[in-house]
Length: 334
Image (cartoon, rainbow, N blue to C red; front, side):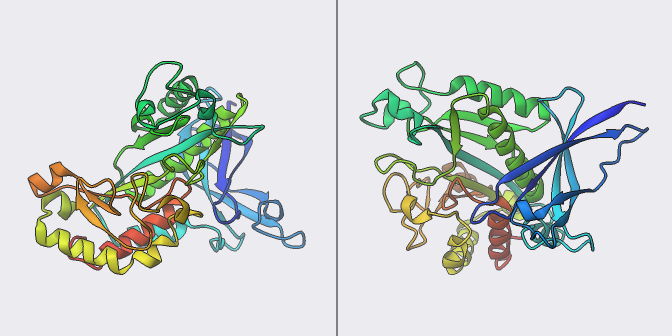
């Protein structure tokens, strides 16, 4: 009987940002493969203790494994063996919330920085940068670093069946961004975590590490995870009155929302380097220095999406979207 290699991937209990964990097993491939629940040691992942360590992995989505031909990656939620979701399971609350709301589409713009393993400095510093501008979407060995890794990453995403919308070198040298396809909140968040997993796996073959630090260098742009969000109604109608209602709802929830925008957000959201200060919610059409940007095309056409520029690179997308959906739910746009 044919056996299939399955890599179980889950989020641990590390704070403030969960870390990705994985372990592999071989399952018998019947006519239809069932990804069985699997036990793991929660005492080693901040999800249990020595005396009470058994936790359960429940597969919630599968991907093709780009590192093992014919294999699968199984994204899992963590639960107790009583079937109660574990306290560190941030996906479960979002899953429950999205059952009440249809038609939401979300796309992420994930930034990150290549870091030197030994010095822990941004890898781009070897280019002796003086100003930021020349590195954005640049080409050439004096402008871009890490392209080969990004090519491997792009192929891994495609092989895994993940649809990404784009990749580009960012303003800070050694920093990159990729954009995920607009999808349902749960699928978009799942895909984001698995793309991070793929990137971490690829980085193991290089003398670098991946940083999601919101401000890896004090003189250059920080790293965000801008969140593009729309509801079915917004894609049909988003007039001035709707935008006013949206801005009011997000503004009222601003202080609470900042709590899920990533550890160290105050270092990035200073009002400088293409950011709005975390101390005050702001909005504007085509304004990349605002908390909330309404794209120019959306303003002209009177329908579309908004870009929330507050989330940092090190967010847990499940928490961010739970908060955003709750806020937008206070308007008539959902």
